[in-house]
Image (cartoon, rainbow over all chains, first blue to last red):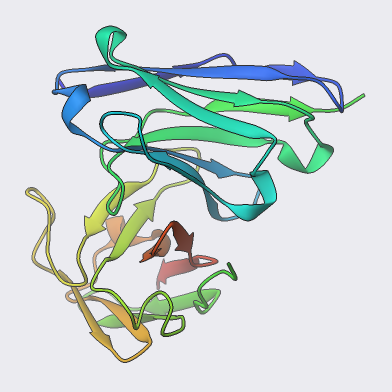
Length: 116
Length: 109
């Protein structure tokens, strides 16, 4: 079964850091671009970042450049998102998804809450 | 990196057809044939419904179709069913970035 499972979300104070993980199974992870997408409460989807199969190309939305870092470990079939200098407006469900131009499959999401 | 423009809501009766538009620019929708559409139920992860403007993944009913003209892409749902009531998002490749639309809530009357 093709599956993506995110973890690492939680409550963090403004200015803090968090590392999200996404474990892939059921498909050849190393052959796919991977992407993070987020959704603030009650809002729409927002593309965050994408990474090429070999990890040598990474792209970010402008508002997160320099604060967020996408990475992957193909040996562990895992995708990561390191989030630093977190802001209240980063509060969202963070999804990992397979692909770079079309996103499938999707994980169930992990909730990140940035608050005092 | 402005969001693509979608109508906030759309509706139709069972059996009818509904079309949802997604307007961008020549830097995203108009510049590439990499528009995709996603269906999302409340509290659930999105699901890919259309990719590369008009292609349907395996398992997606052929009632769902996509098209593009200039800077505007469209998703058409024919023969509306109660289970089609959900939020729909378009997304476009834009070179080194990707951009989503604001989403459209489809109501089946």
